[in-house]
Structures are given as structure tokens and as C-alpha cells.
Length: 614
Image (cartoon, rainbow, N blue to C red):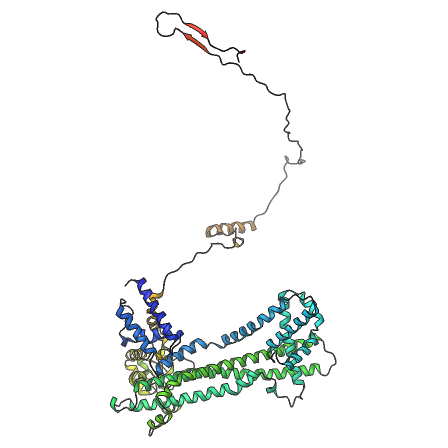
């Protein structure tokens, strides 16, 4: 099959899979991940991306994807969907704040455009314009809705104190950029005035900041951090229980197991991935909570500063008090951004819960408790404490490079391979995920750091590290959700395998642009020749030492420059009498007797016509 045919075949398959996924449990955005993780990485499916595509291969490809997609109660598929959802919806704190500000600007854009583009001529139009400004201020401040009468009245009173309706005429004459800038300043000033007025209604000892906080912040603070902690505790408890069951059935025969070890392992990966995502969200929520506490203190201090500056005096210059109102409004805006950020984290946590439903279908709480009878369920902390007394000895350190807490200054924050899990346990004990203990020792092998759950596991891993690394790779190919969970997708080997299936979809393309789109930017004095630049540099350097001299001689003495003015000759023409002409007959003479006779006489005959003939 040619390359062009292969491209069309793979494109057709992806389109069909996307259409199938739109009506099934897997979203269309997960198609690429399913193809890469579930098919390309799994060598058990015997699908080779380098082989020539045949009809049988295409049919096998579709059947594999369809079977993976339609599997009922599949924790593995739920984990992959969870990973895809988190990658598409989670971003850094800076990106989230940019998105929040962009949404606010887009919400204010239409109102701002109506205000800046308006051309008022009558009093009714001025009143409508003033109400639009109040609406803009309410939407920008987040203190009440334009449909709330009390909020509109408060904003109107505050706006009239700094921007009465009589100034709308001057406002209409401004440029659009100046109008937008004044709208922003009015919003900040009015917001600060409203916050100060609410805080001034009560004494300093009785002021409750919760009454000033945004409604979305009050709701987010009460549920976000605690909800994440509760969900994290549930996921960790399930992970510990699944680990205890897997340790129980690791060395058992297949007929002695009361549950499917494959499903149990997949459920362990599912809750471990959920635990990892919750830890990330909990850390971000903690940063937001700390930032909110700092902002609350700053707002209270700013309000007290305004009280000390305004209340004792009957009149305060605007140049002194307006910056204080704007600073208070800026703190308020940052507080609202943190509230929106907590709300985003809360929504992500709620959405992640939907990817744990398959476990409930497979194991109920009662059946899980019955399987755990007589078993000791150890937490990750207990396992680390039990192995903390073990250390790698000096003999083993000579053969490999180890980092110990006793001999190394700082080992915190190192990029641990397999996301901090023990690679030996994962390879040798049916894919069990046990957290590694850095206190045992951190192995550095081929510029990568490895931790282990016990000293025994570390010693056995060191004997043949490449062998166990290959076993972990095969385990990840059999369970594609491990690629994201163990951060193996950052490995160049996995990147090459994942990109192999998409190679046939790439094509070469080109575009043509003008050499100089803007002629005005062409520098005429530009010189590309390096030797020419050197020549000019030497010439300029030589001019610094050059002096102009003048000398007067006998020939030039008492001479002066003479100028003479001349007149150039003019072109002159004259008119003469007119020319005349006459027509005369053309002379014609005939000589007879030249040929035909010897010694004959020649006769000359004049055949010229007379002038008088007509």
C-alpha cells in the first residue's frame, strides 16, 4: 500500500472511531489517547505500525479500538478518560488566572462597546448612557447584580459622588481609549467606596469580614479544601485496601483467588491516579487559601487606613483618597480571582468522581470488607516507617551511585522515576504500586533517580536494573494507564512509539511570503559584505586623525573670485512669404535608328509635351 493510500486509510479509521465515540462512553477527544495508549503501546494485540497496511490489519485495528471502548465497567478505560479530562481541563495557576480575567473582559466587552460607541444628543439618551455605566461598574466589581435594586442604588449613589450626570457631555467628547480608561478608573473607585461604606456601618471591633466577601468565595471556602481532603482520604483508603488484597493473592494460584486480579490491579491504578490528581488540586487549593488569608488582612488594613484618613475630616482631597479606594478595589479583585480559582478546583474534583463509578459496580463496600477480613491494611506512612531503619551499605555504594540523607545535603524535590513508586515491586509482584522510601537510598542509574519500598527490593533491582526497567516497560504496555500515572510519557522511547501511528498522517506543506512586505523598513545603507564594513570603519577611524590645512601663496595673494552674469541667446524666428510651385511636363527624348541597321543615321525625336496642352 502506498503512503498516500495509508494516509487516507488511517484518516478514515480515525473519523469512524470519532463518530463511534461521540455516541458511546468515550468522548471524541479521547480517540488519539485510545489509539496511542490502548493499541500502539500494547504489543499483545500483535499490531505492528511499521508493517504494510492490509484490509485485515484495518479490521483488527477497528475491532481492538471498539472492544476497548465498549468494555463495560472497565477501570482501565475510566483511568484513561480521567487522565484525558485532567490534561484538558487543568492548567497552571497563572493560566487559570488569565482565563478568569479573559472571561471578565469578554463579559464587559459588549457593555463597554455600547458605552464608548454611543452618540448621545438628548436627555433620555444621557440617562440611558448613565445606567449603562452603572451596569458596567456592577459587572466589573462583582458586588451585586444589575437586576438587584439595592446594588443599583448603592452603585448610583457612589458614582454620583465622583461622576455626576452633568459630566456625561465631556465624557462623550473623549476618545475611545480615554473612555475605556475612565470606565476602569470609575469602576475601581466606586468599588472601593462601596466596600468602605459597608465596612463603616459597623465599628471596628464588630466588623465581620465574611459579610464583605463575595458570595462565590464564601461558598468555595466552605467546601473546596475540605472536600478535596475527604475525597483524598477515600481514594487513599481504597488504594491501601486494594494493595492489601493484591499482596494476599500475589502468590496464590488462579483458582484460589476470589476476585479477578486484573480488575483489582486496574482499580488500584484508578484510585492511585485519582489520588495523584487530588494531591495536585489540594496543593493549589492550599496556595489559594493562604493567598485569601493574606488578602483579607490587607483589605482590613486598607479599610482602617481609609477610616483614619476620611472620618476625622470633613473634606479630603481626591488626590489623596482616590488612590486608597483604587488600592482597596484591586485587593477586592484579587480576592474574587482566588474565589473563582477555588470554584474551578471544586468543579474539577466533582468531575473526577465520575471516573470512579466502575469500582462501585465491581466491588461493593460489603464485599470488599468481607475480602479484607483478617488482613492488615497498611497505610503508605506505615510502610515507609517500617522500612526507614534500612539503609544501603557502603559495599553496594561502590558499585552504583547512591544518595543517602546522611551524606547528601538535600534530596527533596528530586525528579524520581516512576513518580516515586518502587519499580521492582511493580515488575515482580503483578503490578502492585508501593511508594518508594527515599531514606533507604536513591539510586542514580543512567541519569535517572529510583526509589524502593524496601532494602531487599533495592538490592535485587541493582543486580540487573535494565532488566527490571524493561519489565516495567512491558507492564506499562499491557496497562496503558500506567504511562501517564508513572510519568513514562516523558520518556523518549514512549514518545517515538506514540508518534509512530501518526507518522502517515503528516504531510509536507509550504507557504510563500514577500521578501519585504513593508518597503519602508528596507535599510538602504545596509551592507552585508564584512570587508566593506571593515573598509568603512577604517576610513572613519582615519578621519579622526585627519586635519585640513590651508596655505596662501604669491599666486593667490590679493586675488578674489569674480563673477560675470551672461545672457543666453534666445531662439528667434521670422515669417517669410509663402512658397509657390508650378507643374512642368517631364522631358522625354527618343533616339531612333540605334538598332537594326549598320551604318544608318540616328535620329533624335523630342517627345516632351507642350506646356500649353491640357
